[in-house]
Length: 241
Image (cartoon, rainbow, N blue to C red; front, side):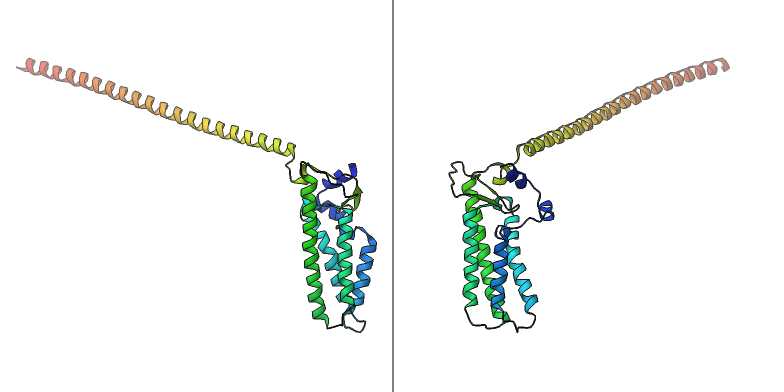
């Protein structure tokens, strides 16, 4: 159980670095059988036979890897379902080997159809198993369970958490803390802007009041000065008379 959850949390790039495979390739005999069956489909005298077989083998084996690694919820599958898919593929290739050779292009078209059907079946069984294994009333009892990334088997049939698409509680908590800090920061910025605006408006009002007071003071002093000047002029005029 510990190994299974360790690989469920293993990042995809690291998994690929460690040589993780797909559901169908976990059994080395399967790859050997596929190579043997594909070799029977191509006559030995066909030009570029080796390169053709290598491309087809790679396309067939990469398909399972691509599907199971595309989504963590499509990672685990009952072993008996894996056996079913392997058997189906080998039967399809065996039926093709019993037919008359009609050329490279016809063969490539038929193998493409087989891969597309295999991909559809693989996605279907993986999705079905994931939905059943993650349901609240999970009662699966299909024997050993295969982790398609690590090729490890487990007796655990029911799962929960990140594997089932549920958000990790720690991530959710960290996201809430981040949002709270963002709100606090925005509130501080807004409060600072309002405070600065209040200070500016108050300062402007005080400056207007001071300017008005100075204007009144200057006007008053000018009036007093003008009054004294007029009075002195009148006195001087009276003396001259």
